Image 1 (cartoon, rainbow, N blue to C red):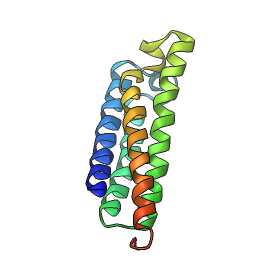
Image 2: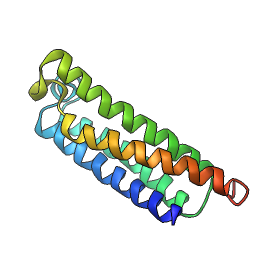
Image 3: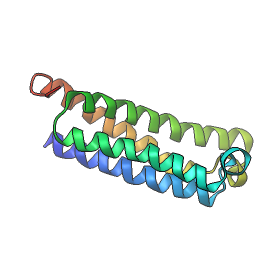
Image 4: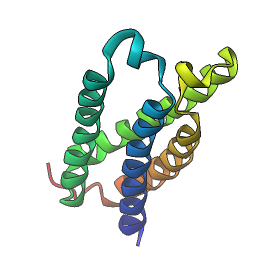
Length: 131
């Protein structure tokens, strides 16, 4: 049951991550125009989403390294969500600023649930995981 719940949280985190990229594009996250342009920004973000999908596949196959990389992914998404919200509050700029705060809330909540369950799963299955 714990593995199924953790897998669900992983899938939800991936889904909210994709929605987060769409929100950043819709809200014109400042990096879009200032540094990258839409094309390069999307290429970079799809690579950043592709890596967790690869990790998810290996997580499903009980690879020890994938469990630990999944924890890192959860923490990065939590920090990402916090960063968008804190910077939006500090600067007062959402559009053409720090767009991503709405899905950032989802990244924080689901990321916290995911990492909590994943840490319990790692503790429970540490001897069973493969390398």
